[in-house]
Image 1 (cartoon, helix red, strand yellow):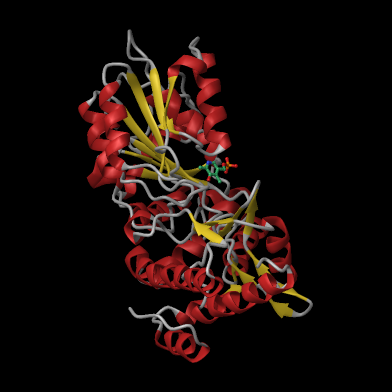
Image 2 (tube, rainbow, N blue to C red):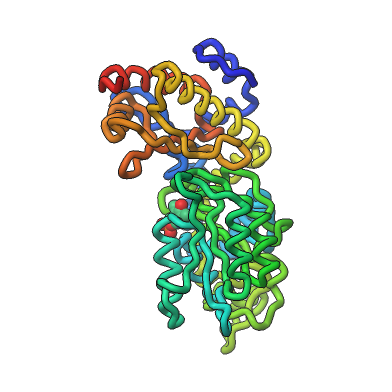
Amino acid sequence: MQFKNNREFTRDLDQSDPLNKFRSQFLIPKHDGKEVIYLCGNSLGLQPKSVKTFLDQQLHNWENLAVEGWFEGETPWLYYHKEMQELMAPMVGALPAEVIPMNSLSVNLHLMMVSFYQPKGKRVKILMEASAFPSDQYIVESQLRFRGYDPATDIIEVHPQKGEHTLQTADIVSVINQHADEIALILFGGINFLSGQFFDLEAITIAGHAAGAIVGFDLAHAAGNVPLQLHNWNADFACWCTYKYLNSSPGGISGVFIHENHFSDPNLKRFAGWWGFQESSRFKMTKGFVPQNGAEGWQLSCSPILLMATHKASLVMFKEAGGMDAVREKSILLTSFLEFMIIEINEAYGEELFKIITPSNFNNRGAQLSLIAKKNGKETFDALVKRRIIGDWREPNAIRLSPAPLYNTFEEIFELGIQLKGIIKQLKHC
Ligand SMILES: *Cc1c(COP(=O)(O)O)cnc(C)c1O
């Protein structure tokens, strides 16, 4: 599409946007009585208005049924996760039995590593992207130490080429091939939190499997942002948080995917809890753990119903919007428009005031653009907040902006452009 830098153009786009009715279904924060332009869905998604209804329903059940709520009511808590599985599966391209909501992301990564990091002989190393999210780094380091290995030698990081901020798929595959007989596990992000790069997860899985490694993904920035095909790609496992693009509430419940190929593997170790026990005989409370078939068999504790309810509210909304394909269609346009506005600004000032380090090919990114500010980065960011534009800041000079297709508009991005120009003038960048 040929974009134009004018308000009328963006209003027309918003009017013809098939998802435009969803914005009014969210609670938009206000500064000084005016709605902010919220471009921080990569960190914490906004609250769907329907969350209150979904929560109220469960508070009502708790009030009126108490313990009987596990078995009674229109959504007995014992089976609540099964409805979640149906809603979650299409979001990541999985079978319902392959996904489960439980715990939080870092906890689930540890649990998955218990099952899927199985070092043996020379094959002990873990391959990940350089500058992975800190929690992922700490998880891998501590898992290695726990098993008696050395993070300094047993983590293989794939680095960008000199002067680049993103990884080439060919380089990732080449590092995998180079260490083919040493890699036990590949644990890669879906979308890097800093650069916004969406990795070729299918290519990584194919290369990893060819090398004889297990391949798992942290989809914190990918779930609810880009379409995924975990089942067809043959990923072994994946975990994601749901409070970023999936708007499930701060610290909301995490999602886990385990490929059905692993369901009946008797050699797979796992940390077990009663909620993962075979459902038909769970309450006989017998000795000796027998897992429920499927991802359900990895559950430890009884379901946190209130967290599931807030997540369900947002999943129902994604379904009503037509699922990830519909959301992605708008997302590509919206983020491309943001890119257009930033490039316009750079061109207007005749220098690259904001270098976009996120890939320019929309197939290699999600909703987020990461900008490196040439001058006055923090001052620019603070001035944006003063002007009611909420992005997020990473030291030393990165501003991340993530338009979320269910609640952001094209006109908001146009307004961001105007405000940014005002700030450049105010801070005397040039
Ligand atoms: C946001 C994020 C996390 C956060 O983990 P929590 O356990 O939910 O706090 C972990 N990994 C990545 C890649 C993230 O982007």
